[in-house]
Image 1 (tube, helix red, strand yellow):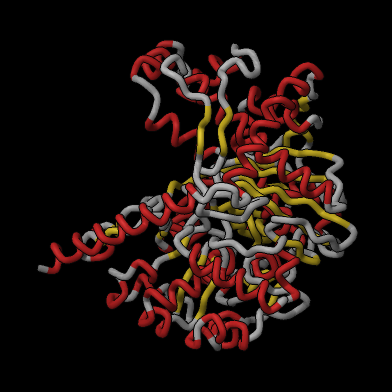
Image 2 (cartoon, rainbow, N blue to C red):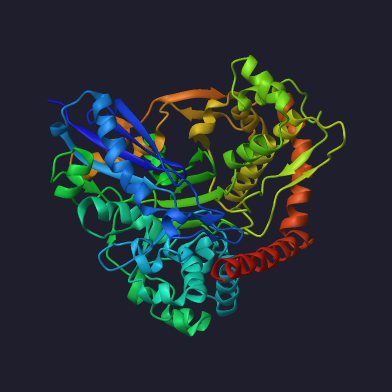
Length: 566
């Protein structure tokens, strides 16, 4: 009799579930549930807060109930699509965006679900791309450098505003009442596991990469008190909790969660994980030198290494952070697919929409076709892919996008191509940083929704001058979670064995074209000049503009609040 596992992948805008056969990794059924509230980046709607509450710039919030709804809808739908007996499911595992933080009470109740905090933005989930804690991140970095904190080098010399401590410090300083009421500061990856099995277990992956936990320790209480006296006790009282290793069982499915999902009560629930890191086993990329790029709204790059190295601007290196026994390295780009979507949603004339519809294409497909017909460099443009800041290698979310070379003759497809190329150039920066620090990238594997764009994949191969193979599964993170569920249920002894049996077969392979490699080399040189000029301190224009914008929006929010309360 065959057994099955369920993997659930929580992305930025939706959650997707996949049912996988344990013996060979065959994906039998899947389903997607779009979050009803999506990303709250401009306001809290009246239906949640009682009245519309405006948000300043760089905020990104979500609603916990949207995550529960994925379990109630996508999981049963995936099981139905698979046509299996749910009684033969032996485990479930989840992965999540990170660093996505949920402030809760001791029992896991999110603060946003308490009436007294419904109108407090800081009570809601802070999504990974919430960048409003940059001032707090700057202070953490400055103090850590001044004190010579040994953990700082494990994060390439800088920690991000996206991460746990910066967001927690922002909560303390901007919403002290909510901070005082918060009893647990929980990664969403762990919160959803808590909902499934009734046990709160911190996963080793997010604790190491986003929670600044190295060699079994967090930053000291003395360090936290030096940041803000009220921050002392943050680790002891709100963060520290037992750590679960990847592939282990966090607990067993509760009766309530069994009713939500239609799965058997008491099956294994795996320790939580991050969407990027969990994809490596799905791609059968569990050995040193195999870099996996999970390309969606953002891109996360993960690679294993046999030795500890300090890589400038990396998001972190964690022992066992991807696969037990190896050092797992992470880097990333905060905006990739988001940038393409931003451009098509606001900057493309109606005639292009009409032409795409007439051709039976999406707007992205139409622009890609037009862009592919251009010669390399023919647009006369070079762009910086920083519309969501720079995660690696500069670790600076006060940076912003730039397009150089615009003229009155520039066409939308030329800008679109320049943006595609910019994200490839950003990836090359990351690969070169790894190679230069002694973490060689021997193989580049692409996963995620953007691999469907064949032109984009060829651009990446030419820019990197590396062959690129794509993962055969369209559900890489969910498949990776299913692999971890199988290990947690005892079907395989470890992640490597499960990946060998259940991992996806390769998809397409893209080989660099020598003449394209040379042509992109010239454009990349221009990208690097702009990258260093704006990103390494020669010009502070981007930072000044952010400060001007923040001051203007903060003032406007105060005016709006006064109008509402008058």
